Amino acid sequence: LFESPGTYKVSVNALTTSGKTFNAEKTIVVRAPVLNACFTTSRTSGKAPLGVSFNMSCTTGTPTGIQWDFGDGVKSIEKSPVHVFERPGNYAVFLRLQDEQGTTSQEILTITANP
Image (cartoon, rainbow, N blue to C red; front, side, top):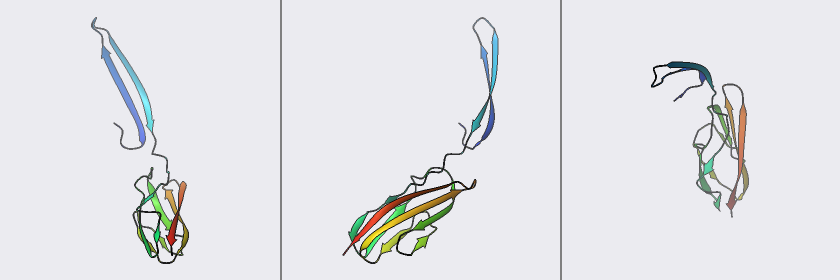
């Protein structure tokens, strides 16, 4: 099991029942998971003021930069923020991520706060 990205040499030695020995060596390159922004919410609609919790545990890769934009002028850098949409409306919520290599990924979801 290779838990960290890197280059690994793997050797195999096999001994047959007739006493012959076979050897093989290979190099395996393990890459970091691709950055892919993903989030879930506790709900996507309801009466304003509407409290919603956000969870990005479905994200893949290793984000080093996190930026939430809730569409109402409020932003956050928390992994799992809770936000209250005070006024009725449709809000486009963006999650933007960046990893150590500078790769970016984003996800968007609409939250509806009803009157």
